[in-house]
Length: 144
Image 1 (cartoon, rainbow, N blue to C red):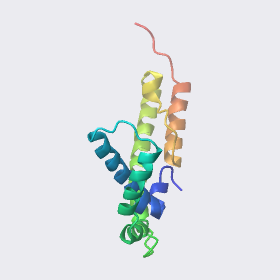
Image 2: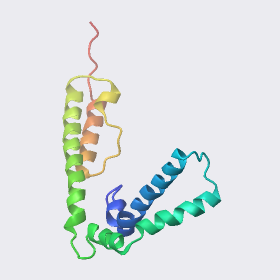
Image 3: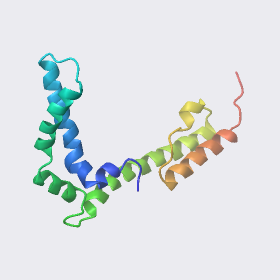
């Protein structure tokens, strides 16, 4: 499973808990606008059921399962979202490979020539290794 993808794969996160967070935040915001500056347990117990009742509906639960491609079964609903992210990562990997190639020809500061982000696929890892090798075998430039 790809990093940061669980929100796409879990139906109740998609259909209920994310909207619950929004609904609860809206109710808290309304209280703040009304002059309430502190939320204690009593206030929470008054607001939370309102938010929960708005969100935990049959329609939201069903839409969560549909959005994750479970019912009706359609894996492409999630895969199409993941592929967009992977294409973005692959295009970044290509940029990293070019940066690594440039680093071996033209000296640049370490922070510009190597991306310190964790690689998420083979292409990114290979680009990262290429960039590091370029730094290790880089010839020092003469000072004029």
